[in-house]
Amino acid sequence: MPFIILFGDRLLYFEVNIYHSIQNYSMDQNIKKKEAAKKALELIMPHLNEDTILGIGTGSTTNFFIEELAKSNLIFKGVICSSEASKENFLSTGINILELNDVYSIDFYIDGADEYNSRFELIKGGGGALTREKILAHSSEKFLCIVDDSKLTEHLGKFPLPIEVLEISRSAISRKILKMGGKPKYRSGFVTDNGNQIIDINNFKIDVPYDMENLLNSIPGVVENGIFSKRKADVVIEATNKGTRVKTL
Ligand code: 5RP
Image (cartoon, rainbow, N blue to C red; front, side, top):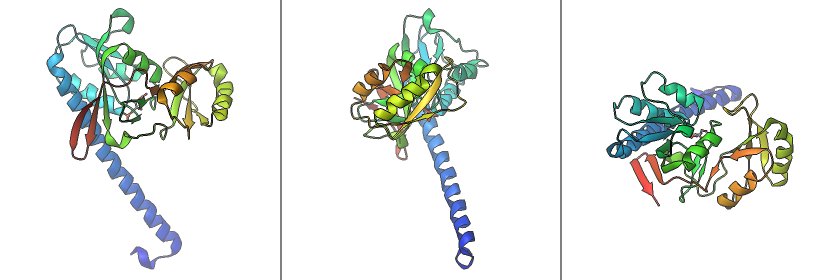
């Protein structure tokens, strides 16, 4: 029993229990992610036809959506993916993979997020695909964001804000971020699909997401930042312990 063993062993006991509770939590989160993904497919299903183009984001929640879409046998024109990783998931599905340059617009863009607030502003880019994700979001008629409710926050910025930068500008941008009050951390060993690097900004005060999105993008060398405020989600599909909610503004 833990109470009769030495102090050092008792610490070990606590660590084991914390480890188990993290495991259970992440299982629950995956179930929620899958539920949000299923709900997104259910919502768009009646609107699909042979001309419909779907934009597909990146990440584990989006992967659940890809799984559901692949087994649905629904008829639509094809998908445009925000990353090489998402594209790869479609290779064996028989679903048409299109490029943004070859289409006029995207009907529905489906993607996850790292944080969202009640105004549907987002932080994205945990998977490093923020630039292409933002391009697809801006090119879409409807942006459906699929999330579990652990990502809801009133004040964006608890999740380290990713920015994609040109390699030569990394140190200069990091110094600028420090002056702005953030703690920049280079995502070591990671190269984006565009051949650039990622800086994750910790402890960043994002009071007005729209202004901060603009300000960061005005720094030379910044390719894009992970605040989605100028083009935010139209619909948030939020999976909770009590079921999945479809939220619109
Ligand atoms: C990738 C993203 C993802 O949408 C975000 O990181 C959420 O990921 P997940 O669905 O795995 O929780 O922005 O660049």
